[in-house]
Amino acid sequence: MTLLTTLKRVSALKRAISSLPAATEFATGFEWHNTSSDMPHSPSTNQITSDYLVKVLSSRVYEVTNETKTEYASNLSAMLHNDVYLKREDTHQVFSFKIRGAFNKIASLTQEQLDKGVVACSAGNHAQGVALSCKKLGIHATIVMPEGTPMIKVSSVKRLGGPTVKVLLHGSTYDEAATEAKRLVVEQGLNMVHPFDDPHVIAGQGTIGMEILKTLQGKAIDSIFVCCGGGGMLAGIAAYVKALRPDVKVIGVEADDAAGMTESLKAHKVITLPSVGLFADGAAVRTVGSETFRVCKELVDGMVTVRTDEICAAIKLCFNDTRCVLEPAGALGIAGMVKYAQMTGITGKTMVAITSGANMDFDRLRFVSERADSSETLMSVSIPERPGAIREFYKVIYPRNVTELSYRWSDPKCADIIVSLQTLKGSSMEVDKELMLHTLSTRGYKVHDYTDNELAKAHTRHLAGGRPGRDLYKAIDGATPSINESERVEVVYRFEFPESPGALGRFLFTLTDFNRDWNISLFHYRNHGHDYGRVLVGLLLRQDEVSDLKQFLNTLAYVHHEETNNEAFTHFLK
Image (cartoon, rainbow, N blue to C red; front, side):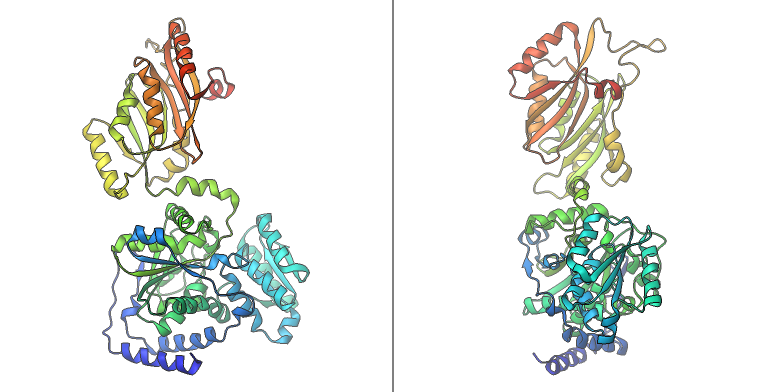
C-alpha cells in the first residue's frame, strides 16, 4: 500500500465516522475513559493522526531491528474466553521496544548534530536502545545513569554501545541524572534523546501498531493494551491505529502507584506525581510528556491501573504461554487486559497486549513468584487449642490445595494460624473464597481475609508464631504450665516429602493417626515450587512417648531431622 493510498483510506474512514453522535462514558473500575473510538474526530484529532501516520510510515526503525511477532496466546485465550495475541516486543536484541524510538530519533538528526554526539538519561531499557543505535550509526554518545543502577544494566549498556558510548554514573535518583544530562546539552552542545516526549520517538514506537494491524489484517480487533510510563509507546500506537482503524480501542495500562497519565487525563493537564512506586521501574515516571499527553488526550480510549500482585500474576501468565519471564513494566499490558476482560465480562473478542520488555532483575524473581498466584487466598483462622484441631480444619478446607500454613502455640484455649489456599479448579477466586469463608464461619471458626492486606502479605505471614505464649514452659501468676519438664516435653522435627497436590494433608494425617493425643505446638509449611515440601513441626509429648515417636518416624518414608536443640529454634522460637 502506497502512502497516498493509505492517506486516502484514512480520509474515507474519518468521513465514515464523522456522522456518529458524540458519546462519553465512564466504565466502572477505570480511572478515566474517553471512548474516542465512538466519538467523531475533531480537527485537532485528524491533524494528529495524519501527521503521525506520515511519521510512522517514514520511520527508519527497520535499519536496526526487525518486525516482532504477534503471537496467539492459547492459555490466556482459554482463560479469558477471548482470542488473545501478544505483541512480542521483548524479543528485540535489547529485550525492549525502546530500540524503535531511540534509533528513529537519532537517525533523524542532521550530520552536524550527529558529529556533536548525543546524550540520554536512563536507568534501563532506553539506555540500551540508545547505546545500540549509536553503535549502529557510529556516533558518540554519553548515557547518564543514576549511581545506584544495577551493574548488570550498566554492563549491558557498555556492551551494546561499544567504544563510542560513554556511561556516566551521576546522582542518586533519576531526576539528578536527568539534570546532569541537561547540563551536558547546554555546555557541550550534545543532542538530547528523550525516552518518550519527542515526535520521532513516538513515531518509532508507533511502528508497533503498524505491525499489529498488518499481522492481524482481516480480524476484528477489539482492543490493544499498552504499557504506559511517559506515554511514548501509548501515543505512537494510538496515533497509527486510530488513523486506520478508529474502531479499535487503545487502552493504556499503568501501575496504580505510578499512574501519571491516568491522573493527567483526569485533570485535563499534565500532573507531576509526588512520588512513584518502583516495582514496575521501567514505567515509573513522575511526569508524563507534554507531547505524549496531547496525543493520548485525543486518541486513547481508556486507562487501567493495576496492583503489584496483578503485575506478578501477568508475568506468570505470560510465562505459561511463551516460557519468557517479562520484567514488571513489560507485563503491564497483559495485567491490564486481564483486569479489563474480567471487569467487563466481554467474550469472543480479539484482544492484543504488548509484552514490552524482558530485562528482569534476577533478584526480583523470588518476590514475583511469591505474589504471582492470583488464585491464592491468604487468611488467618482461629481454631481450638487441642489435639487434632489442625487435622479437623484441614478436612473442612479440603480438597483445596494448601500452599502455606504457619502456627505457634500461644494460648491454652485458642490457636491462630496463617494459611494460604488455592482456588478450587473450575471456580473463580472470588466465588470460591466467599464459599470457603462462609463454610468456615458456620463451623465456628473466626476468619480474617488477608488476600489484599499488604502488611500481612509482606510481613505478618513471615513473623506469625515466634516464641510461644508464656504458659507453654512455665507458670506465671499462678497459671498451670502446659509443659512440666518432668512430665511433658516439646520436640521439634523438620520433615521433607515429595510435593504434589494434597501432599500436606497426607503428611498431616499420617503423623497424627499414630497418636491423636499428641498436640501440635508449632507448624510451618510453605510451598515454594520445589519438588520436595518442607515442614517444621513441634509436638507436645509425655517423656515416655519420645522413644515411641522416634520408632514411629523411623518407619515412615519421610525424610526427617530432629531440631529440638538447634540453636536457631532455641534462640528464636523456644
